[in-house]
Image 1 (cartoon, protein in one colour):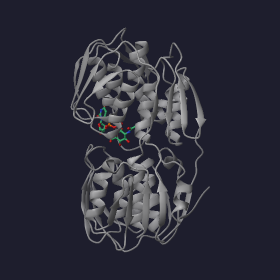
Image 2 (image 1 turned 90 degrees about the vertical axis):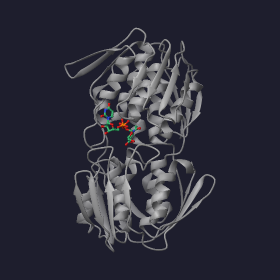
Image 3 (image 1 turned 180 degrees about the vertical axis):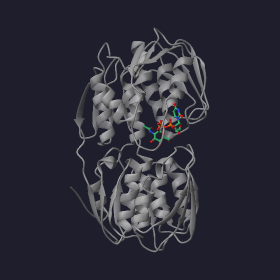
Length: 419
Ligand code: UD1
């Protein structure tokens, strides 16, 4: 069980310095799950030390894989000759991405037993697209007693049409199709960079996948997959969050070890607000000499503005000049932190998925509570700019996806402690 903790921040000063970005949470989680399909060990480098990785590691071990840290960021995963097929309910409840073991388990063992997943508290997150995909590949699915049992002696390649470009469903179906007989085509696939990374990783394991990064992914089934070595890409959401830390405090921050292309939608919005953005080959610097201007933002699947950056953007727009309109198109409830922002002095009105933000000159510190990972990050950002001290309770949500948040923020001049 995770320790409940609070982050205490003394805000109000411009931040300066450098931040090194860690490996991407949303890349490493599906890749860890896919490792279960390998018949020999997998070595993953630049694995972020975050709580969600710990949960996936626990999941892999529960299914029989031996996992060990070779050094701080290098993880060895050795799947056994026969995997367990029941994913523990506790882990599924704690993290939605646990559902990503279904495809790999079906591919290798012809069976997977799960309970409906939980995870971040951002509205309903059904798994119907995952179920439809597995069914299209020939899996028999029986639901009952709170369990979902997937069975198929060997999956068969098929045309799969996704109703929505779901990231997790695309990943699960890609994995399941790797050792199916024949060819699978996923139409209306998600185009996120993490999908391209999963394709790269699967191909290193001996799979034949192409088309990731477009809305049509083709998988030619192979007999079996083997171990490999792979280095995780940088986390574009962590990078975006620290860019906003620079912007919201009127600071000057250099974000290092990033893939600029993955940040374009966030950088475009920051530039539109009037911030000075300087791109390096694998770094980006934000200089925020003046208050940003109000803008409109709508979250969309990649390459649109990421839903995972929307709460942080709302914190920044709370202090912009003018009235901003923010629309969340992916999840039902991305505005859980808005009441706390209002208590800090923000002027925000929400109507369903729309937030109308009238920028104020200043926020003030108080006690607030993180309800999920990105809402928590957004409250930390608000606290950096707020006058006085802010306590962010339930800070453990932030540790799910941000490595060493105290160390990284102190590195750019933040007075922050955890308790
Ligand atoms: C992934 C990311 C998460 C990000 C999200 C959208 C990981 C580990 N997590 O989550 O950080 O916020 O993509 O970019 O990569 N949906 C259904 N039925 C399904 C599946 C999804 O209705 O079977 C809906 C969801 O409720 C949501 C939308 O589709 O409204 C997008 O969800 P999806 O892309 O699947 O998100 P995740 O893979 O869960």
